[in-house]
Image 1 (cartoon, rainbow, N blue to C red):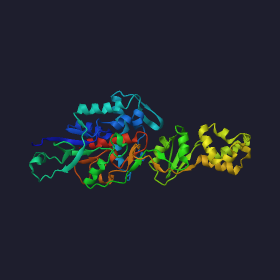
Image 2: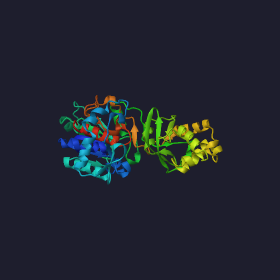
Image 3: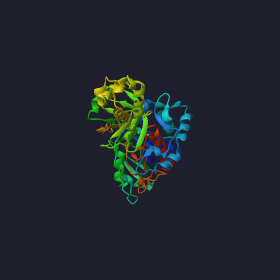
Length: 416
């Protein structure tokens, strides 16, 4: 039985944020577009993001919000399709949204609204979407070969032949877009197929690791975190000259919350992190002044006005156990000052991150030195494009990674 061929102008591997916007953009230009998604439905990561509300962009998008070995690479795409462009699309669909801290924009109702919007854009433009379709092989069509099975494709100028797992038919396209995401959250479809495709075409892939991920402990901090699990507070965290001020959350494994997810992008195994538990105070000076004014008070009583009692009790057992029941007047100034310094710079050494299982992004990826920043096309492989998280571009927490998906997807969609 002779195989039939399905021929498209553009095939996109991956039905996530970047892939769907790229598809809609390309199809609106009259291109025949097919999206292949290996999961049972598209947009799974969109649906779970932001606690189901989807932090779809940020009012303030700057290159400084992104991490890459090539810090200039993201500028072109971010300027070509800005946060204002995506906000305008959201408003056109009447999707209610709200601003939270640091300019973060969330759906007021559900992330389903964003996915429905993208699917509507695809449907209107005539995009074909196929789920449960995994690519098992990709071949470059040599224009000089005239084998019967590829003759029609080569005559029409197709560049790539795709073999689908479990299917006898091949797919052909002029432009192939890799929007497969990366290694983070494999339960939502994360995989390394995009890196495999890059390596097939001799494109370098930078070292990858989990980003925007909770940190764990194996030392004395583990039981402390277990006892404080569920407790949140506003802190400042430092690591490798990076500083973030956000909420910290104790978990039964270690530390999480926005501030830890942010700093995890910079933390490396073996690094310490410094936590300022009282970011609004010079704790040493505050405690010395309190000793003069409230010398009969216990230190824990004073601290309970600023920090949760359970946390104060844990720190008391660590830092001043022998004076737990003593009034401030019995603390030496030197001792109080040292305790204050620890409150402003609590030095901890995580043992590991939780890894890709819970990471929101993958740091590293397809080396952007081999990709054209204006079009997302591989410099040495015509017709092959990479967009979204598969590239070595990762954003801070706060809508930046979605904006990179929109911007890179749109840029490629204009050119495929």
